[in-house]
Each structure stands twice: as C-alpha cells, then as structure tokens.
Image 1: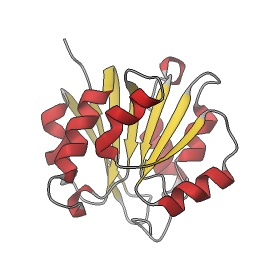
Image 2: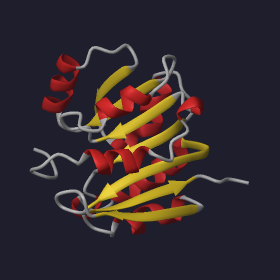
Image 3: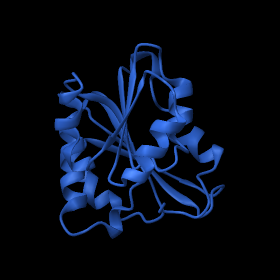
Length: 172
C-alpha cells in the first residue's frame, strides 16, 4: 500500500523539511501521507495557528490517520492531489505555503503527474515550495515547467536512497 517497504529515514525527513520557514507557514499540504511518516514531524514543527492538509487516494490511509492523529491542525482528505486547488479553497485558503510529496510520479497513470505538477504550481504562494522526494529523478519533468527554481539533492541514508527536489515559486 505504500511506495517503499521501509519508512523514510529521520535523516531524509529532516533534510526534506529543513528549508521550510515554519514561522511563515499557515498551510502545509502533504500528498500521499500513507501511515504518517512525514505527517507527525510536520505537525511537530507546525505553528499553533497553522493547518496541515493531507491528501490521499487510499481511504484506508485516511481512516488510519484520522483514528491515530488527534490534532485540530490536521485535516485528512480522501482525494486526488490534482484537485489541490479545490481542496485548499474548500478549507478557506487561497494558497498553500508548502506542499510535500512522495508520490511515485514515474508510475502514475498518463497525464496525472502533469496535472499534479501544474495544479501544485498554481496552488503554492510566491516564496513557497513543492518538496518532493523520489526514488526516480523523472519527477523533474513533471514539475520543472511550473516552478522558477529547483534545488536538488540526494539522500543515501534512506532505503532506498532518494532523490530530493525543492521546487520554488519565485513569481515576479
């Protein structure tokens, strides 16, 4: 049910979340939260007046997270990341500050990766970022057209090792 048989390492989690300006974050969105490996560290860092919206197509994960996480800042949504703009608007937000994804873009059905990349680019505020960790670097093809700058890294201390992307919205 998840993309990897071993959860992401704490080193990967910390490295992925390091560039986030938590003091300026009002809405953080997570695509494909699974069992909450990133969800809990995000909530640990998130301010008391901020929200975390987690979106997953698998209702079993949504039910699990809703039963396991008791935090007023957390909203678990059964839906598609391609609908992120609609989902954040339904919860009273104009944009997200940051979006995190571990979705396997290289194995998504045709057109879905492109739709998610485009919707995410429109949904993130100026100065915000799309944080993506993958086991294939192909995701760059889906996000590059929608972001002004992409920083890239690689984390060996993870099973499997992961390619990391921080795609920034730097609109003029």
